[in-house]
Image (cartoon, rainbow, N blue to C red; front, side, top):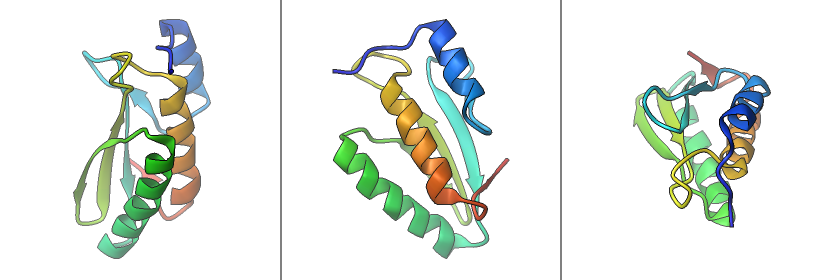
Amino acid sequence: MAEKLTDQARRQALSTLSGWKKVRGRNAIEKSFVFRNFNEAFGWMTRIAMVAEKMDHHPEWFNVYRTVNVTLATHDVDGVSELDVRLAKTMDKLAGKAGKST
């Protein structure tokens, strides 16, 4: 089972993630990805969905056209866990240069 990261561990993890930030008023992290078009955004979401399903760890996300806003938190621990950090790194890797953050 996942364990909630301490504030210090969460800050340290964020320092290793590009463009991710703490959600104000909530123990979660967030990032916006901007792709060249809707097809790229949706394709990326589909690839992430398959990874998330294997992890049994699902993101909160919102998509409009070429932008995908993502929030990660582990609901079982009511905060950020190592699962969120792993999923964030995978999201960044699969987005590559196409998914520049805002």
